[in-house]
Length: 180
Image (cartoon, rainbow, N blue to C red; front, side, top):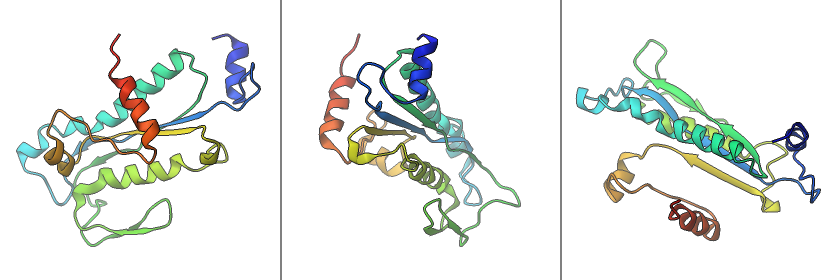
C-alpha cells in the first residue's frame, strides 16, 4: 500500500470510484480468564478458561488479514476484554448494571460476563456516523467462544452462526468452504 492509498483509506473514499468504502466492523470477545466470579466454576471447569479469549484472538487475526490484503474496506476492530475473577469489586448475584445502550440487566449468575461485554461491544459496533446500515455497505462480524447451550446443540466441532441477512450469511458460508 502506498502512502497515498493509506491516506485515501483514512479518508474512507475509494480513489477510483469516489464512493465511500464499505465498513467492516470486527468484534472479538476476550475473557482472559474466567473463574465464574462469585458463582465460581469447579477446578475442572476452570482448567481451559484461558481459551475464553479466543474470540478476540480471531478478530485480531482477521483484522490483520484484511489490512495486509489491502482490501478496499474500512475496518473497525472492537475488543471487549475482561477477566472474571473473585475480588471485593466483583459483580454479585442481584447486582443491576446499566449496559451501553441504557438498558439494565440484573446479574443472576456471575458466570455470564462474556455476554455482557459482547453485548456492549455490539452496541458500540453500530454507533457512529460511519455506520450506515441502509447503504448496504456495512458488515458486522463477531467472534466469541461458544456458550454451553450452543455447544450442547451443535457439539464441539461446529461453530454457532447467526445472521440478520441470510443472503450475506450464505455468501460467507460458501467462501469459508474454499480452501487454497
